[in-house]
Image 1 (cartoon, rainbow, N blue to C red):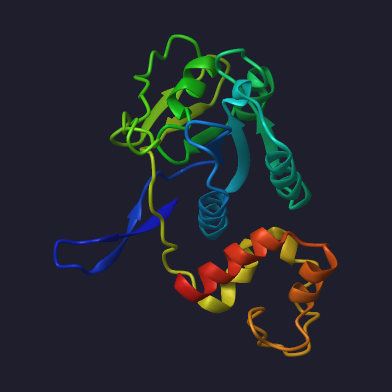
Image 2 (cartoon, rainbow, N blue to C red; image 1 turned 90 degrees about the horizontal axis):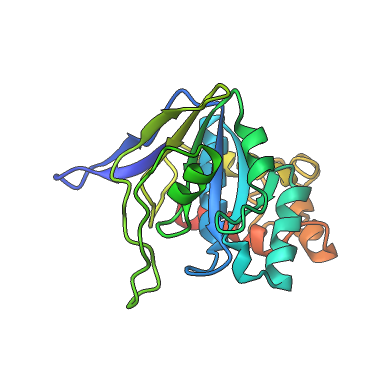
Length: 231
């Protein structure tokens, strides 16, 4: 999984966060901090660009989840992502997540404070990873994992805990390929009026029509547009 970084000379370079993986679990939290779905989309796009299978995990569900969260998770499930609702406090969903990572090399990634290290401790008791706290001034997590760490699982496979991310830009992905990073777009790509449709302003766009008809998530589509226009 690679992100764009900048050298001391302000030159963009690709920075590999973790390699040799089978899958990545993108973690958000139901509260403290609230989900940043656009950032989840960026992480999922980065997974797709790197060729990794991805799952979406909403942690801290013991704080409660609202209708909007249920809707967003439903769109991810429709797009083909494995979706997990977990709480390391009540252990809700931990057995299912443990089964999903068994025998595989899996990285957990997401913003600081969403409970990645706590989840790993719940999946594999005995890891005793350091758990961070939430900054009262920003409601964002404080970094406790400074670099990617790989841990063996008792029942086979490995878990990787990655540093909390606050920004992410795609690396080495052309504008014309960004639509390939949204799996739910696949059924509509190639059906636009123009072969080089950007899916942003072009007339006769099948993806924009699908959004208007409610067949695709409008919010996910806006994430695509932001990636296409801003990178």
